[in-house]
Image 1 (cartoon, rainbow, N blue to C red):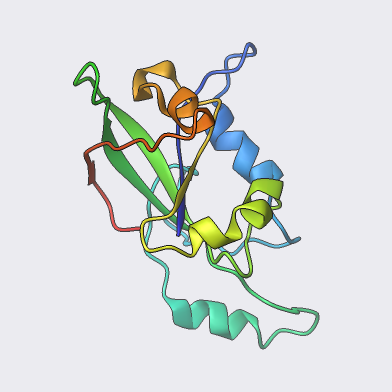
Image 2 (image 1 turned 180 degrees about the vertical axis):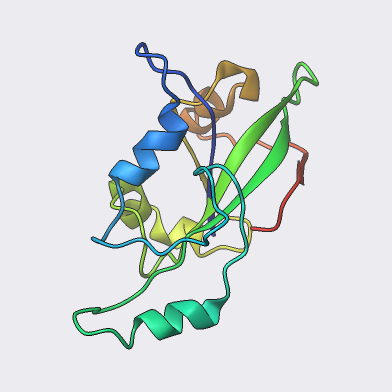
Length: 146
């Protein structure tokens, strides 16, 4: 149950992979670990802290967002690039993205992922393969737990 995308740079020079998900948060409060420094950095967070947040007045629900990085291997060129992986609960997504709702059934599959079309082309022909109804397989190694 993950959504995966690589960093892509906007014309303004900022990393879209850093700002786009934050702009799509499905809520008004984010609880993050004290040592956390940037959106792409995986940092552990005890699930019990989310349960504690439910005890505060006005909190209607919580939804975890798990982050990790992996080395994505382009099967055509054998080039490796780093990708950000986000794990969400498909039934209660923390991000307001129509794709999460439209692809909920796919995300509930054990290896179900969504791939951002705006990812770097170094990831390989992922988008074109999927648009043609073909599957896309890559080897990747997760660098941090998701």
